[in-house]
Image (cartoon, rainbow, N blue to C red; front, top):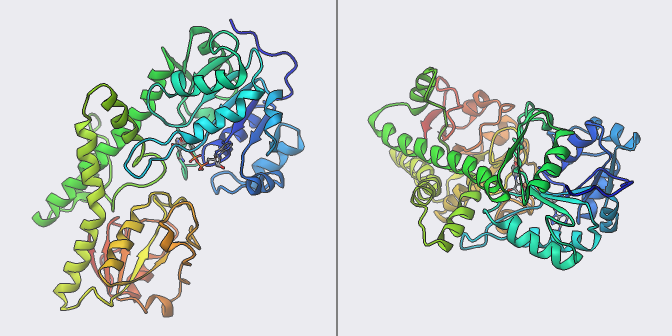
Length: 435
Ligand SMILES: NC(=O)c1ccc[n+]([C@@H]2O[C@H](COP(=O)([O-])OP(=O)(O)OC[C@H]3O[C@@H](n4cnc5c(N)ncnc54)[C@H](O)[C@@H]3O)[C@@H](O)[C@H]2O)c1
């Protein structure tokens, strides 16, 4: 048993207030836990302190009342972490240029937390990462910076995040939470903490197993998306509509789960997490063949979409060079503003390399910011949605099927549409080509 520190001002502190950290902090506070949110981004802290949510999935009216009740406090002062009973880390885990894991944010968070650690605290990592990160890398930095021993003086655990941005049903309380501890005593503390805010906690035998759960969930998605992307490329020349096939197949009440094709995979999880395992497997002299193959297929999808554009233009005796092309959607999935790793940017890059004049429309991304897109697209603004503006384009390429977009109107004004998402009605004036 690792005794909790007495009289802690906060029951839990969340380090890293992004897509994962904000809903987690709000979820704990809504469950009645005195919660501290900490981030190194001062602007984000100011925004949250004034009750403004940067996420469309967490409305302002959930934050302000919690602040008023004293259940939720935001700070940029890491010394306040000292006053918490438990600390949960939700910082980014990107890839380096050559697809190697970059756990620098986790190490930096450990360096920040270390000096504030006191006996009895619990530290839980939620960032998606390879097995061994909590037990080896995070533990090392925490022990070095605090002089305390993990599993003896403080508890250490990993719990994967299952945030599903854009899905209103994805609330902390209802999402089963997998938890692994460094020791049984660490697990006990972590289960107790999460049980305050989550209905169902699922303990596993170790931090490594909990880390592997997250990677397994995302690798499953990554590979199945690659499979339907490949099937689309096989069925389309046969004159078979992949979406019709999937819709019919999913009526099977067992043994089939629908995944949908698209222009590739995006976001901060699916295109990244599988390579965390690939990297770790190399340490054991093992290959991750399925992951590599799925990666090849998913990464080739933007090229496939462009091939469809070139083919459709060619069929009309037109060239891509100089063609005005409108990208419909740059967010990586529908109805959210997150454009990190979005395959739409890859499509835009290839189109531009071929001489096309590319612009975009996305009601969720009014201007391309610094976090998602390659530098050269930064600052570009979404076009206005009106007939005059739409009519300037010869081709539209639909990469993100936002539900608040009027695709009939698009088809009334743009003559050729390459639809990677099966969302544009086919009975309109425009020629609609699946991609
Ligand atoms: N976005 C998702 O849907 C999702 C879902 C499941 C898991 N995850 C995982 O959760 C983790 C976080 O992802 P995210 O999407 O919330 O990232 P994000 O970029 O939206 O937010 C991360 C936040 O951490 C802050 N930060 C960075 N370094 C810090 C430090 N040293 N101390 C304090 N704050 C720091 C950043 O300023 C930022 O506000 C990643 O490992 C990701 O793979 C994300």
